[in-house]
Every structure is written in structure tokens, then in C-alpha cells.
Image (tube, one colour):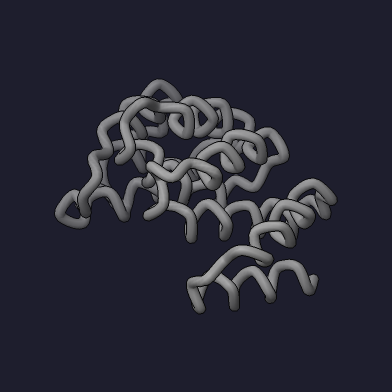
Length: 140
């Protein structure tokens, strides 16, 4: 299993974009879910620039998976790229994770821009689970 494999024992920052750009729009047979174990062995300052690039990828699968990792690396630098994905109709399947990541950024930094964005989304969000998450995040 990848989580106890080579890249956990031997963290290499050059592996981060390789993992991020390997994602497709599917479940990766369980491999994708353990990539966060690889990323957690790196400092936020190393991972965040790669997440920014991945959130701007032309590949929807790369953006979808990259929208989940900011929960482990909440940074104000990720706010604008996440907002672009959240506003993209092409990335509708990623919206829950994007909004969750923005919530993590708000909770970690107290960013007024993050909470304002979440409040705006709450006005138009129709998915029950996403609304519940947004209500929890904007109430903090």
C-alpha cells in the first residue's frame, strides 16, 4: 500500500506535482485516497504552490482531487484558486470539497474573505449536505 511505501519513508518535494497531476476523474482504485499521506510529510509551504497549480489544471480530475487536499493545508494562498473552481460549472462535482476546503481556511485563518464567500454561497446552495456544512462554517 502506498501509505506505508517509498514516498512516505522518503519524502521528496519533486513527487508532489507528479502525484497531483496523475489524478483522473475516477476513484483510482483506492490509491488516490492515500496520496494525502504522502503530502502530509511535507511542509505547507512546499505543498501549497503545487496545490495552486493543480487547482488551475485543465484536467477536471486533477482539480477535483486537488480541491480536497487544502483541508490538510489551509492557506490564504489557496482561497482564490478554490473560489475559481467553486464558481466553475464544469467543476460542479468538486463544489462540496472546494467549499469544505474554504471552510477549513476560514477556521484556520479567520479570513473574512473566506467567510464572506461561504455566506454568499449559502444564499444560492440547494444541496442539503452542502448547506449544512456551510451553516456550520459561517457560524464559527
